[in-house]
Amino acid sequence: MQQQKYKKKKFQKHQRSGQQNSQSDFLYNGFLITCDKNREREAVKEAYQIIEQYVELIYPQESQKHEKLLEQNTNNKAIVKMLYNFDTKVKCVIFIRINNQEFPSIDVDELSRIILSDVYEKQQQVARYIYRMIPIQYVFRATLDEFKKHAQFLVNKYFQLDRPHPWFLIFKTRYTDKINKQQVLSILQGLIEPLHYQDWQEPEFVFFVEVNGAIMYINILPKYHEYREYSIRKGGQPVQDIDIPERKNNFVDKIVKKVRCQNEQEVKNVISIQDPNSDFQKKEFFVEQDVELL
Image 1 (cartoon, one colour):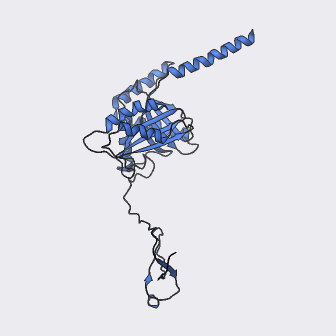
Image 2 (cartoon, one colour):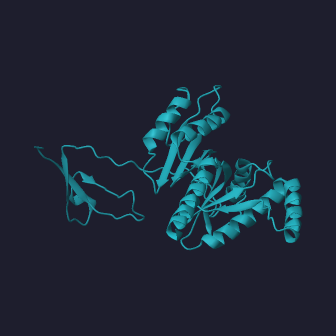
Image 3 (cartoon, rainbow, N blue to C red):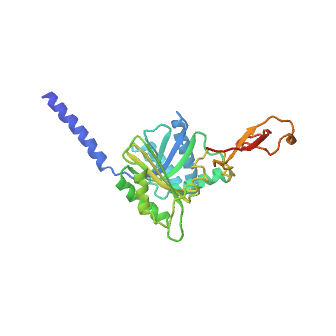
């Protein structure tokens, strides 16, 4: 009898937990943060300080409301916070969730834009342990139906029909193989009008999708390459256009031989060859000869 009761209680326990997971259709927004190895605790504290500091500057009313909640938390047992550390179960990856029910006016995109402008335009040192700080609009269970539903909201917000907007997909997945990049890309191509084309070199918008186990994080990020993939710890200097020399891999009917000489006049048809990737000039003399290619 005792064994039967024990089995019955154990079965009911698992059944209740399953029902709670099926009914909890959670929808969060916040910041997806990457940090150094074994520095998760320091990164969480630093993220709290950064977000609370900029909330006080941008949303003073919400900051005052947060201070009142902190005073009430000392007297009451039910603790209400503005920020929560959401467990991603991934090393070096943190998600800071914002309490939208108590603080509905806080916009993660606006917070991120002002933080990145201070880092890259004003060249302010903001973070020590945090590497990337990506704003996330929707966090939900990793299914294609849920992704299509929430991706439609982002497409309607950013992709207007006034002019073409080049875009590109950034897709990352960890600890799951149920969703791949091709499935996500096919859904986005069906939602986004053909007027807007894909451009990985200079995209206006980057559709960011990350899947960690059974959880999916999505948002549309402007100026993704200009802000160095939303890194807030790179000295505060924006990316500059650098002319990279192109490598020529074409076959020609010439062969180059190295010869020993002291002066350039000793050899005819001398070629000066310099490695474009080297930091110094190495002066050597080469001679080219015609050969017959097989």
